[in-house]
Image 1 (cartoon, helix red, strand yellow):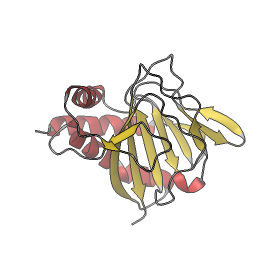
Image 2 (cartoon, rainbow, N blue to C red):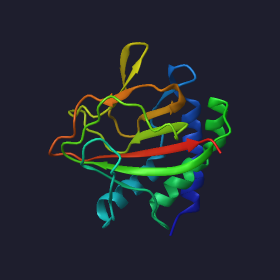
Image 3 (cartoon, rainbow, N blue to C red):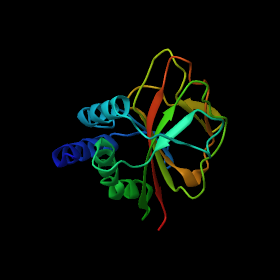
Image 4 (tube, rainbow, N blue to C red):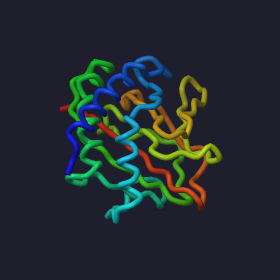
Length: 193
């Protein structure tokens, strides 16, 4: 059963963190730090690690070794979905848009996963990625090419980015996922109605 109090607290927490975003490229790319409520993050990770999740292959991603889930009714995944959905009006204000929330994906990146330089699918108007796990020894953060400079989002737990996908900012992962690690992350998207 989902916990409405967790959703309410987590929504207020993430809204505060959204207001504290750091500008990487004005109107296009922002760094988000300590973005998700710690209690919700813990619930989501415990659910992902301790439960028998029906992970699906992510066929449109580069290479292999990326799995995903988009929805699990009555679990912390639904709580996370509702929390991120609650931010839609504020995210629309940041980018001066009237987008609708399309949903979340939880990615599970396993050994050997890597991402070459790319831009995201043009159907996506705004994208957010938050790392749910981290390891300071692993080079698994996203690097953006901004004004011919490489800007790396550090691979730290509860850190990520918010991006205007219409700006077509190329990005990639400089390293790959090693044998002894699994990278879990939240990816959320908004699109034009």
